[in-house]
Image (cartoon, rainbow, N blue to C red; front, top):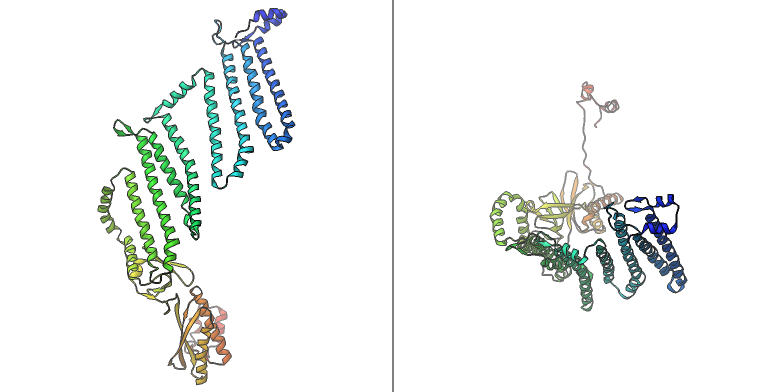
Length: 576
């Protein structure tokens, strides 16, 4: 409403200069009107401070009953929002002294009133919702969450914070809608207009419904998967399943994504499916994406199930069956995974809206050309199948390939075989290079992983028969007493020029320390033969420079250090 300024100033009986100054107009309002509004603002500020002071005194008085923590929380929650709401309310009420309508002299005279009244009207509403949000937060942190922690155990507790955040979000959305009428709009009509706006043949309301269902699905998926995990664990305990955690390891994520994707597939149904008899763009794109992800997720789930089935059932069962070929287990596992991968690929093609038969036929025609071009690439896979069928070696065998590469078979793949060498390193050999070369399987007669080793022992011919027999027994005893070596055999092979040649053979079962075992055996042979007085044969070779050290000495030794020339010169008449 407008104030009758002339009547008011006459009643106050101010001097003319002051009355004229108060009539000065700025932006459609006189200084007198601005002064009254300032008094309203001051009154609002004072009332807010008094209300905050009274609130703190009341809460502190009841602090022994409420508890110090809850009392501090209430002061924090109610103090500032309540003070702001009182201040904005009285300031908004004070805007009645301002010019509320345009005048003939100034069509913009009402702008200050319009801006201030709308600003503080919105501020009052937002302060009220801020107060409600803080009260909700105090209730959640001080009452609801402790009660949930005491009464609910397990993974379900983590979903209640999500519900609290959703309640906070809904509260602020309501606050925004509640502020719309301040600006002269009908909230219901405005919201309906916004929700009816179309983009890509779908309304905003449809998009919001899709997103809401998707978010709800994600929340419910976590709850359902958590419940399913508990039920499976309980079932495993009742059935006395050993190591139940190994069964469920890795399954939670694909199951969670599976439930979420199913929910997304249902949420897509709220979008427009057909436009003029043709598929809508958003619908077909989202449907294809969800279909592809669903096919990938199901494939992932089955691959994990295959691993769990082999690790926890087939491998332990095969270890108890002597007739079962352990070498077939990796092949069966890889073949099952390959079959699942092929089926998953077919479903991915179908999710993209293509005919799997036509695509596979096209791949078959192109596969012939690719096969010729990739002959060298495919050769190891074909050789791997041949190794599985012929089985020249199995896991754990010690083999020598082409007389230069040897080691324990650690893995037999479709493309390559991995050998663990004596030095402990891995040697990866393509299967085609193995199948086309000689393979020496060095397994011991009892089927254990071992390497055959042997060395020639030459004793001097001057040893009498007793020393010879002692040497034969000694070499065999040394191997028997060396850890990691077993089944020694010693043979008298032949006479040499000045020695008797013996051959010592044995099996090394500790392949990681092959060279250390040979070193230990040879060191023991050297020490024990010296102790027992057994003469080992030593080759004697004499190199003579006689005939070369004459007058040509300086020329022949050009470039040698002077010290070496002097040493050789001192020995020129002796064998070197």
